Amino acid sequence: MSVAADLAPWPVAATPGDTMSATVFAEFGPPDVLHRATVATPRPAADEVLVQVAAVSVGRLLDLSARAGTHPYAKFDLPHVLGAEHAGVVAALGAEVSGLEVGQRVAVFPAVSCGACALCLRGVEEACPSLQLIGTHRPGAYADYVAVPARNVHPVPEGVSPVEASALALSGPVARNQLTRAGFEPGQWVLVQGAASALGSTTVALARHLGGRVVATSRSAAKRERLAALGIEAVLDATSPTFVADVRELTDGHGVDLAIDDLGEPAVWAATMDALAVAGTVVTSGAFLGGGVSMNLLRLYSSCQRVVGVRTGNPASVRATWAEVALGFRPVLDRAFPIDQAAAAHCHVESDTNVGRVSLVHTL
Ligand SMILES: NC(=O)c1ccc[n+]([C@@H]2O[C@H](COP(=O)([O-])OP(=O)(O)OC[C@H]3O[C@@H](n4cnc5c(N)ncnc54)[C@H](OP(=O)(O)O)[C@@H]3O)[C@@H](O)[C@H]2O)c1
Ligand SMILES: [Zn+2]
Image (cartoon, rainbow, N blue to C red; front, side, top):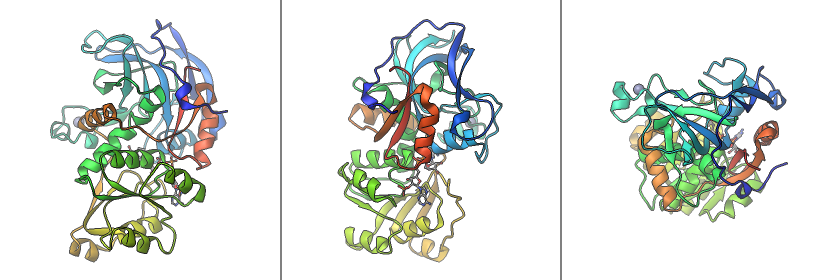
């Protein structure tokens, strides 16, 4: 059973007990390896905050692949608590934390960089060699409470629901960083492949919010219908034989200035490159379909095009995201499930029918 996402209210901060409920998995496998358990409540370190979780969003790589045992690079100590993208209220503060207060509504950016290496000091924290993810390398938010570094916590503006805040906690800063690294400007044509996906839908919403003209794609007619209902300029099927001609026609022959392709599927990638304008930029932040794509370097250099890898967000893109949220930027929401139905939420994402974010909520 899923619920309307806006039914979930923000919780009132409660005094944490010694134990809490969490959804864990002790072996890799299908969604039903996820089960409820009573575990010790984490204690925040001096520079950490204890967050009482209100909502946590489900992602394909960080949640589904991790639980299935097919995550391409992370190692897990089992049993493990998943949950990267989350929002909640501050329940306790570490001894050295200032600037936050108990009861405050916050979203947690789950990528923890060292803050001290040359790349972090250059403002490229997403490339930090010791980058860790909450919910992957440390316990996550499929739990009543999670202890997180205070510098990963960002206040949530008024009028934003817990599900919206959790849906933006990681994908918002990734989408913002994608557009920044690509040199996005208002008025540009932006192609988003896999636009119904968790990340793709967020990039679509942000590009539109910032004044981009968006071409969104899905292979599914049902998803294209739901995407079109969002008011997007054009919704196409990248696997259609007329796709590139359709994009050229839409853009008066110009092609798209910017393309986002987080899929890593060879035929979709070829369509992305064929639809790209001279001096255009392609950004990729994922390749769950393999990533072994081919490139015509002759065309790339002679058309002055760029391909940019964006691993994740960074503190600057977190701040920029929440500034845009205060101005009305919102994610695309699909469905929310109660936290004790995490397996059903994983099945739903696995079925590949979502348009936008699938979340787990604690307060129903
Ligand atoms: N770097 C980061 O921080 C970050 C964060 C989040 C996600 N990601 C990446 O973004 C990608 C999407 O993840 P998600 O969680 O957003 O996905 P999701 O919500 O599960 O959506 C899956 C997407 O994959 C597309 N797809 C599935 N099979 C396909 C195929 N054979 N050919 C073409 N398209 C296919 C679907 O398109 P249809 O509509 O056509 O079915 C849909 O758009 C992954 O590579 C993930 O690793 C990266
Ligand atoms: Zn670093």
